[in-house]
Image (cartoon, rainbow, N blue to C red; front, side, top):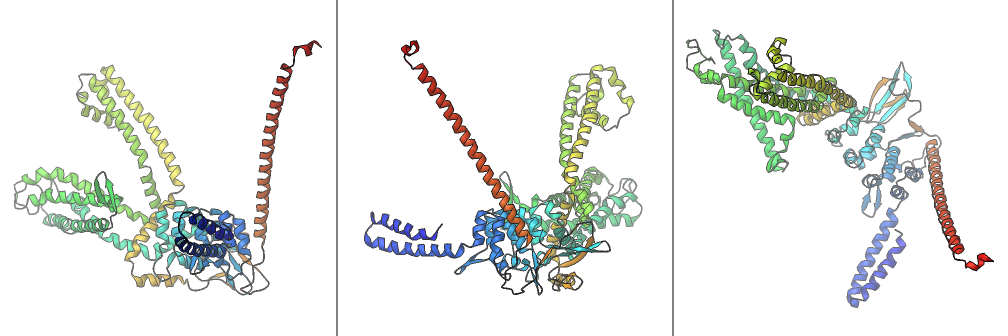
Length: 630
C-alpha cells in the first residue's frame, strides 16, 4: 500500500464522519486518526525493504538480487531482522508463515552458503539459530518441505580425495547443544514430525547415532535393567524351574523354594512398581488434561502407546495370578500323592486353579517379551525388521478376517446338511475340523467318512481350495507389496525410533556426563577444510568413501579483492544463472500471453464471420420479388 494514500484516506473518513457527528467529537476522532495514519506510514516506509518486497512476490531470484547489495557483514541481518522503532520482524519467519516457499528457500540457501575472502569465513548458521532457536520446530510445523534445504546447508564436503576417502564436516552444535549447555530439542522435533526421509538425512542420522552411542544407550539400558530383571525372575518361576518338577511335585526343596521366592518377588516388588508407574503417569496426564476419549470414557493419554497398553495388561494379569497362585492355596495342605511337601503347587485345592493359572502365566510371559522388544533399538537393522513386522500386521489381520468369514460360512453350510458325521454335528466342531484341515493337522484317512457323503465332501474341498490356494496366495502378494513400500523407509523409521528413545532417555542423563560428552566432541575448536585451511567451530569432522557423494565443485565460495566487512560480495556465476533462468521464465510468460491473445482474436474473427454470413443471408431473403424478375 503506498504510504501517500494514508493521509487522504483519513481525511475522507473524517469528512464522512462530519455529516453525522458534532465538531467536538470529530476533532477528537481526527486527532486519533492522524496519529494512526502517521504510524502506518512509518511502518510502511521503514518496513518495506527490498527483501520484504521479494518475499511478497515469492521470488527466489528477487531475494538473491535484494541481498546481493548488502554489506557482507550485514548480509545475514538483512534476511533475519527488519526493525521499525522498537518492534522487529524476521523476513525468514514471515516467508515461512505466509507460504512463500521459494523466497524462504532462497533465504536459507543464502544464509547457509559458506563465503570466504583472504581473511575470514562468513557463514550465517550461528546468526540463524541465535535469532531463531526454534527454527527446526517452525519448519516441522509450517514448512516441512524446507527441512532438506536447511539440513543440506549443514554439510560441507571437500572436492579433494585422499586414499579413496573424502573429508566431510557436519555442523551439529545447534542440533545437539542449546546456548545454556543443555540438550537441544531438535531430535525431539524431528521425531514428532514422523518423516522417515528426513530421518535418513546424513546430518540427522549421524546426530542421532552420535547421541545414542555417547550417552543415550547407557541411560536406556539402565532404564530397561529393572524390566530385564523382572522378566528373568518371571521366566525362572514359570518356565525354567518348573521344568524340573514331575507332575508338579519334586523332592528337591530348593527348587520349590526358588519358585516361591521368584513369584513373591514378582507379586510384591514388580507388580507394585508397575502400578505406581501407571498412577504417576495417569495423574500427570489428568492434571494436564491430556486424555484420550473412547465414547464417554476419558483415559490418560499415555495409554494410547503400545508399551503402556501392554504394561497395563501385565498389571491386571499379575493381580489375577496372585489370586490364583496354586502355591499359596496349597500352603499347609498335603500334596496330591499324600505327602506333606513345603511350597508345593499340587494339592486338591491348587489343582482347581492350575489350568487357569497356567493360561494367565502364558499371557504374562507374552507381555514381558513384548515389552523387551524395545531392546531392538540397539541395532538399526533389527529395529527396522521389527518395525516392518508391525507395519504388515494389518495385511495379516485382513487375511484372518477373510479366513474367519469362509470358515463360519462353510461350517454353517456343513452343519445344515444334517449328515451323520460326528465332526459336523455342530458349528464349533465343524470349524475345528476345517481349521485342522487348513493347517494340515489331519491325515488323509480322516477324510474317508466325508468322502462317502459327496454332498459334504464338496464344501470341504471348496473351503480348502479357497483358503489354502487363493487366500494364501493373496496374502503372500499383499505382504510382498507392503514390504516393498515399507522397505524404502525402514531405516528412516528405525532412526526415528532410536531418536525417540534418545529424546526420552536424556532426562535421566547426569549433567556432568553430558558436559563431558559435549567436551569430547570439541565443538568450540575450529575444524579444518584442508591442510592449513582452518574453518569455523561448531562442527564434527569425519571421512566418507569418495564414491558416496561425488563433489566436483568447491562448496565454499571464495572471493579475492577487498577484505573489508562493509564491502559487497562480487557477483558470482550462480546469480547470473538465476538471472538467465528468470529471463527464460519471463519469455515463457510472454509467449503464453501471446498465444492466449491469438486464440481470443481467432474466436472473435470466427464469431464476426458467422454474424456477417447470417446478415448476408437475411438481406438476400429480404429482397422484393420484382428485383428477381428484373
